[in-house]
Image 1 (tube, chains in turn yellow, brown):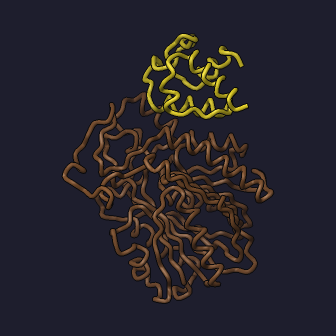
Image 2 (tube, helix red, strand yellow):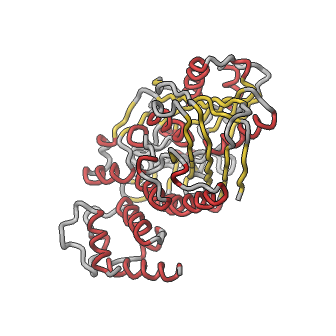
Image 3 (spheres, rainbow over the protein chains, first blue to last red):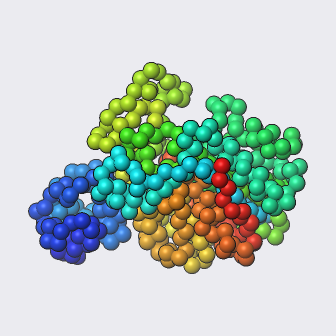
Length: 80
Length: 351
């Protein structure tokens, strides 16, 4: 999985995000209307697609899409 | 793991009662339209039934369900030797609601009755307790009544709780039957997560004070008083998508079963996204998973029987193999596998 694939999957979850809005440097809280429901959707996506369960605190510390991606990769490594 | 098996108990029927009053989350104007759409898509809750200020309590709903079930199965009341009531919204601090129900249902004094204080995991826990006692005591028949009126607490100003819960009461009739298939249970608990879903004040640890009723804004869109139910959605989500699949994978190993061994996997109706994540992780097919959450919301310990009555009542005439799993407040979670042979489910009652 590379970051572009990751972005595509995120994009697929949020109907309201205009195409091309999400970039590695985009702040996830800049997603329009970002709130707890978005957080649940992101956690569910990452759990289903990558087999790691993000905690709420971990997600709250993350700022950009790149940081989120790095965290997922890191958690996946720790699992192995 | 608390894994155990119970023989000789058959589930003869299930019934459910809900209040007439209905609220639609499409009309929940405390949040924006965009939030509303996302809330409904994520939680799956479109509508829910609420007692409002009708004065109807959990025991009223359970009583109506039990009466209908006894009537439709033609069960003589004097054959009921045990009544177990599972709820976190009983009528009184004391006496136990199960005992008042013994009398209100016209059951004989030879019937034992007690309450179990559990929520989302309560149906499976309740089944394990009543089935064990009935199996050991060779009781002819027993009633398991599960429900809550969770809508009675949360204020409209708390978007993290208010739109999720509905009210319902259910009745399950069990009988001693030496030809019944073995039921297998796996029950777990983790009290370190006790604050994930909690009503902080009004019990003995923190009795009510005037401040218990003061509304405080916790964050945007979330105001509540400390007597109200508080829910850490993220913590519950994490717990559920981690521990439930873990419990069931272990359960599969212990029972030498796999997803296709079951006709239906009925989950506590907590949150659509959460339940779907569990489904995908366990590799169940969508057709195996009934949902009633769109119509009734999260109805606590009533959700599993309510879903069976609401979604499967015309599909259970023959032999059906079920996997049921409840999970949530406590934290507490439990799974059971069981087989029914001609389960009788009257239509949902409205009060």
